[in-house]
Image 1 (cartoon, rainbow, N blue to C red):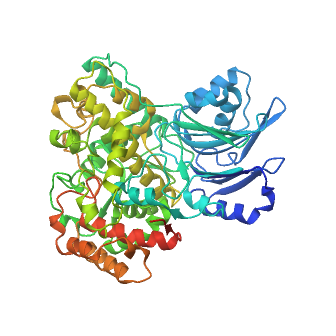
Image 2: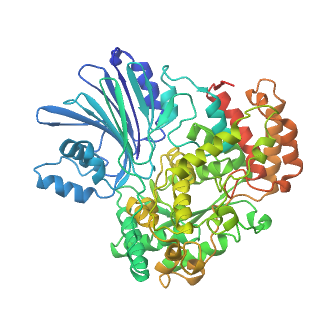
Image 3: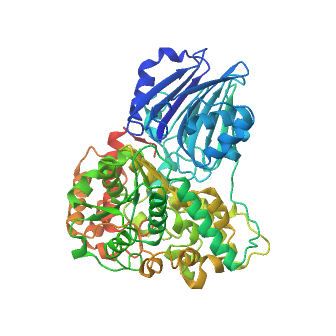
Length: 614
């Protein structure tokens, strides 16, 4: 994995902008600590930048990478992994292509050279890349179908700037840290999610999952090369079970390829256990020995854990069981609540936007520990979105409510805002919901339930899942750790989208099809364990820390946040944390996380010099 950036300008000699280019490249160093490179076009109107984390062919995969073909040069900067690189390489060799390296960067570059913009239809992987095509004098860029890897950009008269992270864009004086009304609506009425393709900062945009673009003669053209399409599911019950198992097993095995040390995250839940079980089998088959697994927890969490609808049991009860079953070398990372609190600030710097409070900071600390011994990890994100794992899929009252199911009640959001501020926030969020639902592709034969489940799939795919993928990418890459997500194979996505709900929730269970597919292959306690989310701290020390921290923020006259936040509403949360009827966002953001979110908002505004256009 890596960090990429680029700058195109019709009027400027970019070779004379070395200070800006160096700052942009340096800002991405955490994503790529192993190497860096810069490319200028012959006219110096194009600059491509790269920071490398060496995973495949460490000695030969330097970027930007240039290859000549037909008398013209093609140069790529690329962040990601191609999981079908061997098949693509064989196809290209059959066409007469010869390779100088074993890295997938070269495979991707030649795929563009031979197949042009249609190369994206051949790719299976997680990626964001840009190719400068000397023949066409055009830039082509694309983002993977599921949106695992980021691609932000900023267009201005006569130029275009792009980067893996917003921090690199902001190092260019063309991009200002201004947040207008839409940005504030996103922060307070949708956050920590954000509108697809919207970078919060004014005029900063992001390629959507499955989107590509070309930039030629100062004209930017964008198009979707992948969307969720409704087709009839014709497989039988047994065929569906077998197909799920085959697709997932194949995806996991493809993602085990690495020239750097690799491990797996293990929570003791169904999703991570499937990955760890499959990876462990592959390791033993290939003679690689024992698989290393990692889990995260918090100081004294066993003492303070309380069961809830969203978190019915502790991960620690199941991790040892699964680790023993696969004979992994297990490592338990235990985070202190003090470290969790202070990492709130680094998690802002990792995401450049408003994170998911300590849900982000804990993952950042966890990844930092894993990076001490490993460069690559596999994780079980996105199974819940694709296979109906969340409670809102199974509660009919929530399911058919015409709002985002993870954030259906805006009263807690409104309660912390000053009176009269952001009056149109609720309508803004409602319209975003409707825009997404109305874009859902369906079949005329869909039942009422299946029709709604398609809508829920699309809502989760473009909103909730993107928030979690962004969290995973930034939190891990901030420490130079590459985390792969096997459930995000687009073949699994397509298959799951068109699976009838009766099959997906087989036997009335969340992720019933997955459970049945791996029944008998893992301990029964794991296979049929009730879904439990990513662990959070239950220690009252953390609540005390964020309560003091938010009151400190609101007492400072220099804090721009005081223009927006109502201190009485915040005090109500501090004094009566259990009175919150529904979470701020998802399953994990309740009283402590809301207070942490405000602390992070203040730090973000100061750290990035944010100007609010109210």
